Image 1 (cartoon, rainbow, N blue to C red):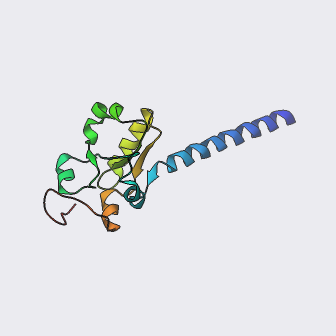
Image 2: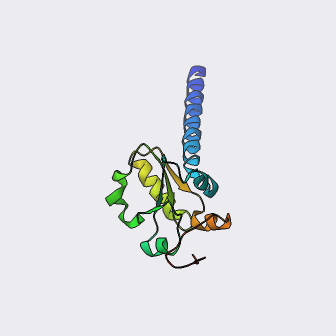
Image 3: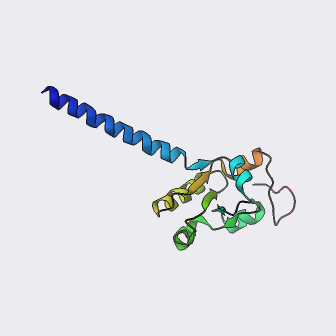
Length: 137
């Protein structure tokens, strides 16, 4: 009976440790706007803005490419596997979905920019626009 209890306790400990590792990995799947800003010009980084083309034209990170989330099944497998991929949207929700989809498609280098363009703007980071200076989100 004592061996059985020890074995069960050991198995439960392994299960809990596995959950903690998974949680730590998912926590690493986000980056701050400042981190994206600092790495935006690196050849090893790709910034994907998953908002609509209209949102993208209104305001964006200069180095970002627009690939709308609603068409992710058409472009996700074309992403390079040898670069860090930063997903961006307005608030971080759509980009989080894109990051998870990319991760499920085998991209271990996919990250969600937490807070989206709203957080980018709060940080005072530069944007470009097709609609003039200081467009509204």
